[in-house]
Length: 141
Image: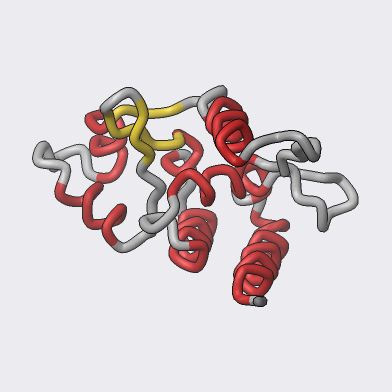
């Protein structure tokens, strides 16, 4: 998680978070669409996953971009990614969800980042638990 100091404005915190997210590999819409379905040149499969919150779609410099790690997963890892993105509302607040994936988890001794954990079948249960905890934290008044 980004730890701002007490003098940080909300705008500077968001700008810092976005810059950290953008340090990671991103795909453009054409690349992301070909990973979803290499035969779909209309981007329908990609847009269906974005519309259902299964994939994170960010807008940057007037273009849609997609965190690349989402397209490197298969099987159970891909399923967990989709479920977590839905639970965290990737469509409603994609930058916050991307920040969650790329931020070290304060709840883990190793401070691992969830986007690294989701590719490890032995740690998928931890990713699910972290997301559930995040949803629970967000629902508290």
